[in-house]
Amino acid sequence: MRFEQLGTDLKVVIGPPAMAAHDTSPLDLRMDPRFFPSDQKGTYDFQTINGRETLAQAMILRLLTPKGSLAELGHADYGSRLSELIGRRKTASIRALCKAYVLETVAQEPRVEDKAVSFSFDIPSEGPSEIRFNLAIKPKTEPEPVTLNFAVAL
Image (cartoon, rainbow, N blue to C red; front, side, top):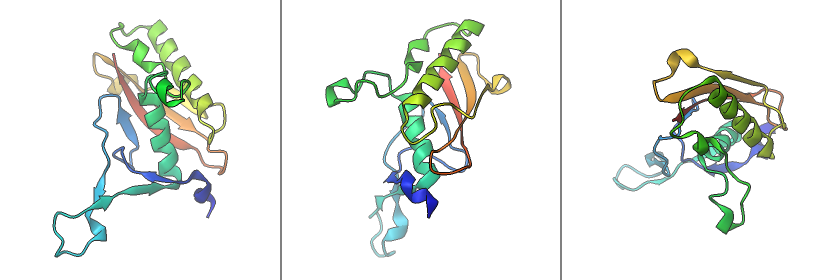
């Protein structure tokens, strides 16, 4: 199966089918009751994800994590600079910074091509203090891009 190279991970982001995220979305390990008999009510196992969903979640988490926040764990370059936009007014220059920070973050993910397939702002769906964008990235192991919808609170 071609998706095997993208791996398996614990599920912490709600999705798909939408694979949409907001930087204020709650993140937690998702539990799955399907793996236990009905007589074991309240017993759950961690949900896992595979393939394209793993890659989408990894990209969302990379975008949500402030760059440098994992330095003490040996991952100083992991994350994005999107948190630097918090408290800023929504202007054309802030949008340009947002796009630059996202593309910089995409280039860090080793499982995708260095350049995004597409990036566009979703201005009609934005709230007054957020920037929304659509991002398509191409996994190195398959031809079809993975698309994410993302919102950054300012």
